[in-house]
Length: 467
Image (cartoon, rainbow, N blue to C red; front, top):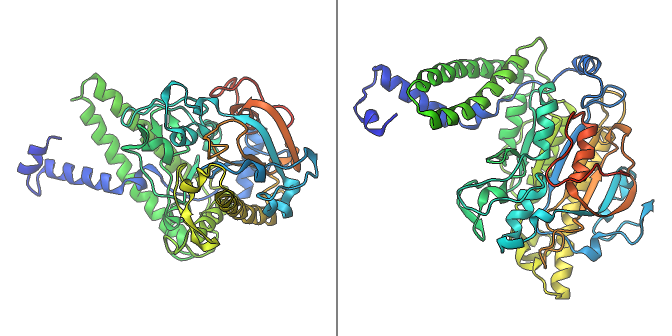
């Protein structure tokens, strides 16, 4: 609708009503794009496992989950890597916090992202590190014409997302930016997003813990959420009906290029319609019966732990089986004064061999692992529907797209794989794979999630053996 029409239309006219509703839809934003409904009840989980054997479930019928957690700016290699391979490996200094659940953690060496290296593109290693991490492709160097690739989490969500109210969950403990240039001419979208539903469509993560929680379980106090979620579902159904009607009318006035844009938009609307239909199936909203977070917490550690807790509850209630969590964008210059490191993280990462800076970076690396270890402890202590732990029935990547932050290298990336994959993985080891694409590991995970006909992904060359 042209701007001049908005100026002449009066309240009460049909055009004004249409404009008002369209403005209202824009204001809803994430509410329209990201509906939140009930999780499946265990009986329905088992029914799904029976009708679709092997699809995102363990041999006992419990759901199999995958999560991808990203930490920024690489790690100090000497403090990250264990000194010997095999079972019962000695934990390195940085990985010491994982001791309680070492038997469910696999340290994976020798994985690379060669498409994150500079090549002819010059600077921009932080943007390439984040943008390549789950896609395995070389990004287009542009601040406006973005082009990355489908991320592995979204490949999984396409195949198994229909089994849960949320096909996937995207979380961050950082600010979000999808426009403008952030790193040597690369779009901010590459640095602030891990998940991509297409080469040009990042899945913007949510940073507000309360908003994430209420999308998952509904607003209100425990016990009231089911009714509130049903009310919101009716409202979203009403909004959806208007969107489809309005789009059909508009489509007749668009040229071919704009029709393509509208079709892309309607793809997301149709996905929303599918989720609403799923949520309208018999069954009550599964309320975790805990208080919703108040909003943004006072400090970074609380923020990180809240998001980990929400991820745990989302898996526990089977609200989703696929998730990403961006702890901070690559290149983050956050201060860690609370642990005695007041300098910026990124500034310190270019230590140039300075022992004092190396020590401080090691402290930050270990702090991030400590937060992850707390999450694993809770996952290990939470029983799944089959009596195993949530951690046993999960595959959780923890890693970064930069290896040595001082030199901006992208080979031998710091990557952990936590969980037993429902008994399909062999954790409790340090394994060197000798220079394989990280996407080979993603292919192996995709097989376990039940993906079919995924022969290659990104720059993969084969399935990663011995995981």
